[in-house]
Length: 266
Ligand code: NAD
Image 1: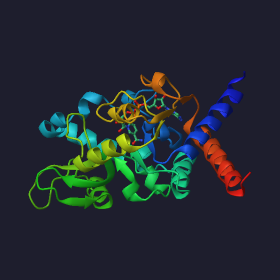
Image 2 (image 1 turned 90 degrees about the horizontal axis):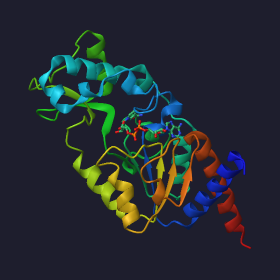
Image 3 (image 1 turned 180 degrees about the vertical axis):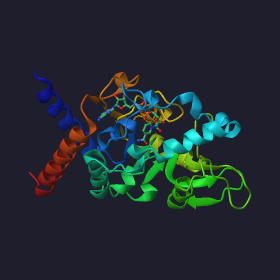
């Protein structure tokens, strides 16, 4: 069987699982946003070929002004700052509008699910967000825009107006604690769902990568849409090796067709 036919068959199976699911959770990684022009970390040409992961630990951020400056450069990187949602983000938001999704758990900090129309409270951002900035000492919040003005005016590593603590984008660095509410809720929703759909993640970054295992251990079915192998492929009912944008567009179409057919009865 040709690859295209095989993918079409797998998409149809995934659409059936979505329609049969009572609580469907989508889990996304950097791969859902590569078609928006944001490179992932681990693919060839990924962000780690431009930035050094060792410069992005929380420890380094606290101890080195140079590391803080690099963090702010990543914050302003135009590939992330000006990215727009792609068909995969729109399809996920549409699945939510159709009443087929419980929530989206994302490792991404780009905010593209919400830009595509997913309600804020339905996006659980496990690694935080670049949508705003926080003082790591007193917690004061700043809008992205007000900090960009300061960075553009030459303040390379901005500090808090109130307490002079270090400001930091509200994303989570390696070695920094995960956001409590989001992590707790993501874990709970992963354990309660009956279908868990991974889109564009290598599933090697923990604790985020525990989520699909929580779902599988609790009896949920697993669908993986990713260009490369993941360690959890063997647990999946359906593994689709295709670009997220194409796969999700086709999947949404199948779901809509099947919903229409079932509303018209036999
Ligand atoms: P990763 O870089 O480890 O893996 C991305 C996966 O997506 C790879 O397996 C790759 O084969 C696949 N992929 C790439 N393009 C794809 C496409 N068009 N369709 C389908 N699959 C595609 O990413 P990760 O698992 O998310 O973990 C890396 C960490 O990097 C996460 O913590 C995340 O927070 C962070 N990150 C976020 C962004 C973002 O916000 N857009 C970008 C880079 C990294």
